[in-house]
Structure formats: C-alpha cells, structure tokens
Length: 363
Image 1 (tube, rainbow, N blue to C red):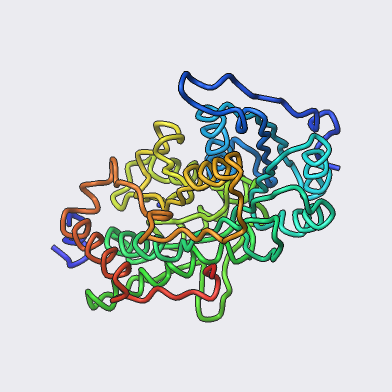
Image 2: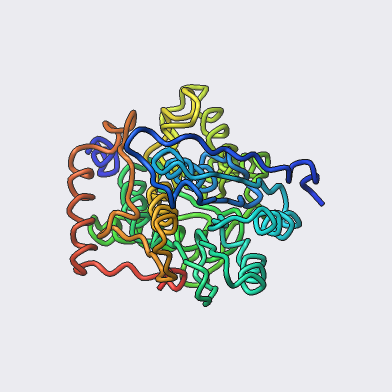
C-alpha cells in the first residue's frame, strides 16, 4: 500500500420592479424584542450572487432574519443581479428609512461608501470589506486564510492523485485570502509528511491563478472544474459563490462512472452539506466556514439596541468567526489520524505556534 493510500484512510440588470422591497417584519416572540427595537428597520443588499447563493449572501440574510425573529424589527432587502444594481439598491434602502443597511460583499464597497458619505446620520455594515473609514460604517470581515489552511491540509491528506486545485470567482482579496490559506495548508502537509501534493489553480507567491470572472456563471465553473479533473486533481475548492454549484455538478459527473480515485470538493462560506442536493453533498470533503449569520445578527442586534459602533469585526479561529465543517460522508476518507492532526493544527494557529500569513487577510 502506498503512503498516499494510507493517508486516505487516516471543501440595468435588476428591473425597477425588483426594487419594490418586501417589508418582512414579524411580531416578536413573547419576551423578545423591546420598544426601541420594534421601531428599528434593518436592511440588506446582496451582491450579484443573490440571496439563494448557498453562500455568503444567503447566510448574511439569515443573520438579519434571526435578528428580526429575536427582536421584532422590520426587515427590508434588495437583491442585486449585476453591479449596476448596487447603487440603486442602496439608495432605495436610504429612501425607505433603514436604520442599518448591511451591504454584502467587497464589490459593494464603493457604492456603500458613497451612500454612507451622503447620509452620515444613517448606519451601514459591510460584509467582507474593511476599506471604508467612516464613523457610520462597521466592517465585518473574516480571516478565512486560517480556516482554509486547515482545509488545504485535509485536501492534501485525502488526495489519491497527488493533485488538488482551487479557483475563484473574481480576483479580489476576499477570494484570494481563501486560496492563500488553502495553498499554505497543502504546503504544510507536504512539509510534515515529506510529500509532494501539487496545487493547481493558484500560485500564492505570484498571486496569480484561475478565475471564472464572476460569482454566478455555473457553466464556466463546471468547465473549470472539469479541466482540473482532467489534469488529475481529485479535490477542488471553488471560491465562487453561487457559481460553485458548477463544481459540485462536475464532481458528480466525474464520479458517475465509479472511478477508483473519487473526486471531492471543498465548499466555502457555509457548510454546503446543509444546502446542496443529495447527489452533490456526499462528495463534499469539508467546508471553510465564515460564521456570517452570527456576526450579522450580532451587529444588527447591537445597532437595534442603540449601541452601533464602527469598530471592525474580524472573524478568526480564536473567536470562532471562521472554521471548517465536519467531514460528513467523507469521514472515512479523511481518517481519524488526519482529523486529529487538524484539531492540533487549529490550536497551534490559535496559540500562534503556526503563522498563517496572507497579504489579503483583513486587519
């Protein structure tokens, strides 16, 4: 039996009618909410992936809805289909008197900054962006390189072919930070095991790699994944929002013939096992998690209680803001030894014994 076999055993344009926003306020449960919160309107604007992306838009929205259920606040939302929707969607939130507007994604930064500057008495929170330095804007960011490091280690330890891959939606810091961490995790496996697992799709040193150009093109994502599989990769991590479902489809297709070296994927942002189809999720190795719903709920709750502040939130392994999911159906493939090693590595990262560094990490 080879060493690798042993380790296998041991993630214009939106129509104006879409801007008719649904007010989704519900009466708070008995004992929940307060008079101040009941007069509070919390709003959210998605990026082009929309609220059903099974990723960061959807989970951020769930955080707002959790605050609604807990506090009895009023909720409004605007779903973007293209970049040209960002400004009108944010303006509609302002016009509707939102007390806090959550803009989801790095791509909304410029439009959010403009809206915040023009409306200094209104509050905003930016998910996955910390570029805006204004008193009325709170950044919510995540050092996903730490969690992706763990996923890279698991991917390398689970690969039979000796090749793994990653690609992104867009070449932006909130995407490439995942890819940096994943790359370092693969390298750490190689260092610890004297192995030579190869990473396709990303060169951390050169900051150059494979991108599909957006977060919605599932066909391009599927083709990209098929190309990686044809090159020999048997674990692929897409960092591409809704487009990543194309990877899940490609993996299902690749495994349909009962191939010996089963292909798996690593999901990101949320645990894909909770939302992917039955034939897709069984091939999920793990997920790199951002606790988006929890952090958004906390920020909205604080603002609704009259305690908004612009202090940046940065999710880490230490504060539980990032992590990796269970191995679910792939538990046997990962193996107890690798699973134990991952827990040890996680603690060493928290303690500072292992440094996970990325020029794309938030400060």
